[in-house]
Image (cartoon, rainbow, N blue to C red; front, side, top):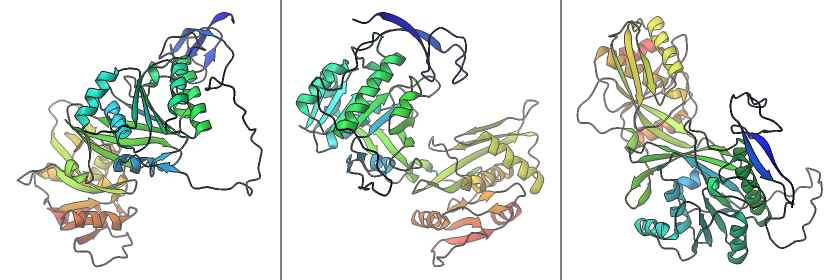
Length: 451
């Protein structure tokens, strides 16, 4: 048996050191280096039996045969959209999110829905607890096998026996391998167990879905190398006090990272929200000042979101600038444009901005809706409920064009809006819109049109 020794790892990036240091030389973080006891043993294949493996040969790029990626449908439209069409065979998917947000519910729901042989490995819950959850989901699937195990060697022994089409691990932080003497959840264990699962996924073309815990800062717990080793990193977001959840891809080797999936948490599981505008636009009877509707895009999906603004006289000496779901620096820039180009005196006023529905937006096309909501709140004059906006604001006060404006206009028309404000410089080919398209050039024109 090999000699036991200790080594030092950075908890942030996973860099290894021979001795303790105050600062990590790779990621420049302080006090992140911890000591771990490791046991060096001969590395084996994920299979217990020895197997003959062919050696890959270098090919010219012209000789490489390009086959279309074979995907497994998850039977879940929102997840398929975010992944780019389904699970790619041999891919590693990591799902992160806050405790209690619904990660295990989502993957169990998917495991019960896929019409293939699924092995669901849980290191956190007993088989009886998972059975209770599956009864609550009201989905029956005899092809889904549940295994409660944390040792990877035992898991691979079960895999050889079952030979599943999809493997689900809940969660990667609970696994441990016999080849390293360190506690589950430590950097060396996470790195080693993920490497074993990656080797298994690539050699057998089996998709592996991992659940990952997150730190208090919102990053996935463990070394950063964990996110580099997997093919897809999904973030499951939402507020536990609200029923809506947002699924977005932070990394996707097989598709776009701009797509968005929206779910509603119900007593029977997660419901797919096919029309996101139902949750992003609040229902109200009367016209209220300080609200404006923006037409935005998340990947290929158009969304209508509600921008809420509140402008009030500053009670304290320094005016406050606060934004939820929107970049505060961009809000300050738009306030400066209103001050300089439109003559609004907002320097001595508090300005609060909120994107309804708990969504975060970085699309510059909502600039015009932000400006309109601020002007509406400042004047205490409501904007009509059937008006919406899709344009960017420049520093000179000009209204700039945005991409795929026709798709935004058609979405607004489909949802029953009567008027949409866009830039005059947008090239619109389609002319028979049922919705009235108002073309504007400067911020002043918006004020004159609305009030």
